[in-house]
Amino acid sequence: MTHNSPFSAAELDAVPLFRFVPLECIEGILAHCTAQELPRGERFEPAGPLDRSLSVLLSGRLALHYDVRETDDPLFLEPGDIIGETFSAGEPGVPCLLVATEACRILFMEEDLIWALAQASHAAACNLLGILLRRRHDQSRENFAGTVREYALHDQSIVDPLTGFQTRRWLEGVLERQVSRAIASGKPLSLMMIDIDHFRAFNDEHGRIGGDRALHAVAKALRNYLRPTEVVARYGGDTFAILLPDTGGATARAIAERLRQRLTNTVIDIHDGRMLPPLTISVGVAEATTGASSHSLVTAALSALDAAKAAGGNTVTGCT
Image (cartoon, rainbow, N blue to C red; front, side):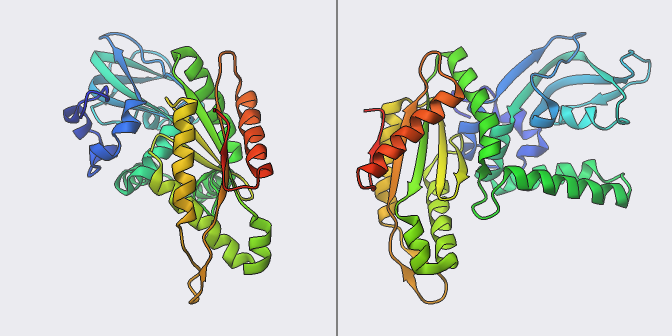
């Protein structure tokens, strides 16, 4: 690994989540994860909600005690184990306690980074699915089916089935955390809002299939062009939002301009022998400022997008 990552290749090799994953492909994601050091005898306190994050034991050993009492016969976590999986392994509502039996080092990954990992690496997505399936292995068929239904309903609320990107609802939660993180660290944070120009007329002329193929084309271009740590969501209709951590407004505008140029050269194959005309996009860019909120950042980016569309489209505005 390069100096940008707080984790070594050796300790990541022991983690099933990263098995067969080229680490250079996810280096940017790992650079945004945090490492937690836990001295011997200390209790583990999760850095965030366990249902919205992953905590992975990289080295050391943790003893698991149920009912918040240290017992003589605890279960043990070894390097590579996902700590959140252990907390949920007991009976519902039964509290538990994790204590370091030797010095431990723990990787913490927030929800937005988990999604970025799954999008950046097919192998990582398969590994994560395998972990989830193993977790449910001992449950009854009825309980497992119920869990799948619950997950599917949850998934529909946070993942857009057409583009595979996260939804506005999901983005709003991530945006609050990212803005707070940027303010606390003093690092820049920018947001792009993208609209497909004249999309309603495009839909009227080429039909719903043509419109869907256009959205697919934009989604593919965004996925191929952006870095894994840059969070993309379908904000609604033909509007996409892109959150760029550690990126100032001037750089975000340059990225938006290159993306605009790339999309003008994108040919849309409708898979019936027709090739649809290239698309153009309008982009509004905003940077989080001191004292900014997630709401004010979105408002600024949408205002810049409105200005780009008012100028005739196929342009980038904001952060000049």
